Amino acid sequence: MSTVENIRKEAEKWLNNNFDSETQKEVNHLLENDEKELVESFYKSLEFGTGGMRGIMGVGTNRMNIYTIGMATQGLANYLRKNFNTLPEIKVAIAYDSRNNSRLFAESTAKIFSANNIKAYLFEDLRPTPELSFTIRHLNCQAGIVITASHNPKEYNGYKVYWEDGGQIIAPHDKNIINEINNIQDISEVKFNANEALIETLGEELDNIYVEKLKGLSLSPESIEKHNNLKIVYSSIHGTGVKLVPQALKAYGFRNITTIKEQEVSDGNFPTVISPNPEEATALKMALDKAIEIDADIVMATDPDADRVGIAVKNQHNKLVLLNGNQTAAILIYYLLKRHDELKKITGKEYIVKTIVTSDILVKIANHYKVEHFNVLTGFKYIADIINQNENKKTFIGGGEESYGYLAGEFVRDKDAVMSCALIAEAAAWAKDQGKSLFDILTEVYLNFGFFHENLVSIVRKGKEGAEEIQNILAGYRDNPPKTISGIAVQTIKDYQKQESLDTTSGSVSAIELPKSNVLQFILEDESIITVRPSGTEPKIKYYFSVNSKLNNKDEFDIVTESLNKKIEDIKADLNL
Image 1 (tube, rainbow, N blue to C red):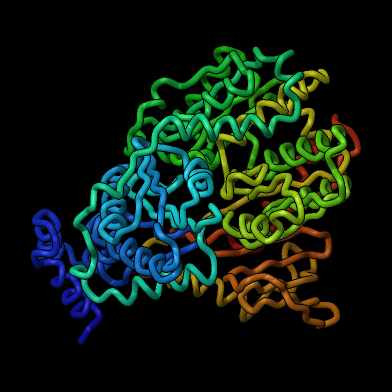
Image 2: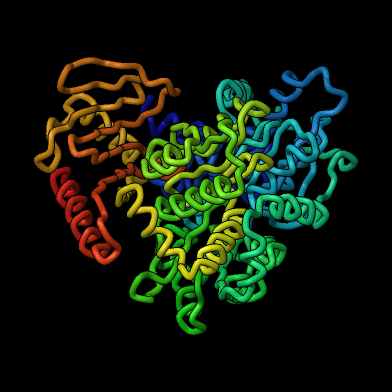
């Protein structure tokens, strides 16, 4: 029997009365008219990646719909009931973003939990992902769900699973939940009939408690008081940030906040942008235009679930420029550590966390302030895990990843753009108190710790064939690793799948004390780093580049930038990118 014949048989299982009539109609259409889409929709089941389950919306086992979400929720419910069988009541919290079908998926999730005798707290309207993380801990829940596909294109939605610590699931829970889902043989095993008495609505009372906790992170209230008229332009890009970012900024004391009204509209089609991703310049265009119009000091834009934030500031030429995630992380960590040091809050038990693809400038900043640092795999759940491991023993000051996600404090266990907006604005007020801008602070960091420059190339390879091509590319690098890149010798090869680090000069191999992950890292003799990994949430293979040089004085900023850009371009050319 051919693969297509197997796929057709799988699709035909969706033509019974366990599925609604619209779903059956669409499956019939695929069976009769669109074999390619039929294959893409049914050739596999959606898998849990770095953040749970994420995919294109539509009918089929490989699509986001109430049935694939139903199987996942039933599997999670079964696992919760086994894992917490001694508790008198099992509780979960559920939030969702502005994407198409997010409310439907969230309600379906709540109904299934309640049908399994699990109490479900469901937010009344869209809310940021970090607030869900906070709520799990605040209400002593055993798990949480966010319906979101973060910054993915509009055709996507997702299902992020959180554990009782407020962080996304990690081993062994991720594999155990997958096993429970795989044990479900038929959609008839999913309990869709809700027990409404076990569904409770959450509203602004949680917002106010969360924002009050954010205020407790403030390190420079006196600077904000002096510069509360700092001109801030903010856009929620049609997402959940509209609910809480302006509220948090006002709670901190900022009074001059301009929002982009057209992008305050909750719309899963994201009509004013090509992609709702603050990593992309086009997503911030309307905010940048407004900032130029009113001569703003800083621009902020958050993704649909408000866990990532893109920032723009005025450079040394008084021109608004977008910061990349590493630059924003460098400014934020420098600000947090410097202020902790000035306020004599560093006792020797503090630490920061970053991911392996995030700039090593954060390590140099931490070393300067004698603060411990941890390197973890890509995915904020690993940062949360370090916080959990050190709870009540050490103090987490802050952390971040190059993909525009940052965190401070310990009451949220995921990247938090609401918190980041407030603290970055505070850093800007603190800088202004010294007659400086945030760009001046970034330059100061480069002067003190080295000019680190990063770049990212993402290559999209969609569908089944694309996934296979990505795996083949990585296998090629693994089987035949380059000896030189752009004429510079490869000194170290880190294979996180094998959990081995190879010194190419001596041939010695050392262990990598991190979980297995399909990531390769090439470290060159001049300390340049090239990292290759498949995305855990999108059909992409990602290449991360980090190069560095010395910045002797601020007047050399443009020259050094140009030199490091050329270095990265030479590396890309050598890798045929």
